[in-house]
Length: 273
Ligand SMILES: [Zn+2]
Image 1 (cartoon, rainbow, N blue to C red):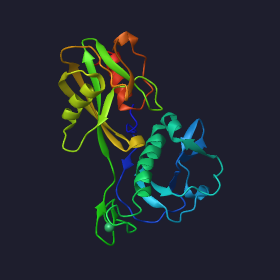
Image 2: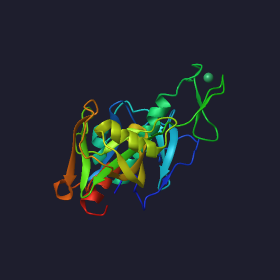
Image 3: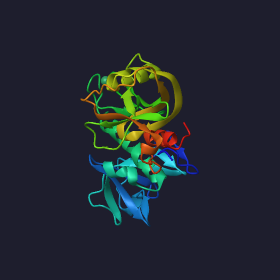
Image 4: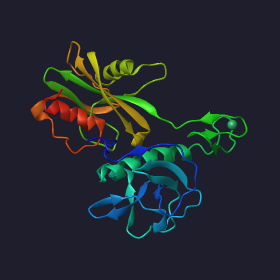
């Protein structure tokens, strides 16, 4: 189950410009995390009527017809609400709340960083017909930032290449990953990143699935591929602390993960790939 797999719940990103009302959901962020409300065993999005000011709130999307607005954090946390750290957000349930909070965070960062025109420095204004920020002076139109990146599962017979990052908070087993450069296809990115990070050649690239990953403003594109030739790993130690070939029974279960990486590793472990 990946973060975007929220069916039967429905995500609707239709652009809406109306002001917020008391029954709408409020997504309030600061640098550390998002305000969520305890509900039973899990979490819910706070509503404006719980004590969030509607002034300056901006419509982001709807989940199951409930409009979700970006809002400034209230001066005092509403009853039953807590600031949930971004690093703890992966474990929030139900999944439609996780998805809303992470997708809202992606938009929050974009709006926060587009207050001034990147070309001429004039304050920007929200677009009237589509999600954009427009400069009233020079006319520059800026759209939400989505960075494509690849996730690569390299197979060598019944073994899979697993890595560990040297410099990220996430310490578990990972796959080769990297951003698509300007002028590059995702397939070229796969071959380049595998060569850069572990010094291996690959063949038989097979697209698997993609995933919006709002934690890092990315659209992840997942590929399986096969080792081509020599299996000796030459690690890029600035990026990775470890890289190794693991057989299916050496790979820990990832069944509760919400990431494309987790699903791709789990599929291999279960013998589905
Ligand atoms: Zn401008």
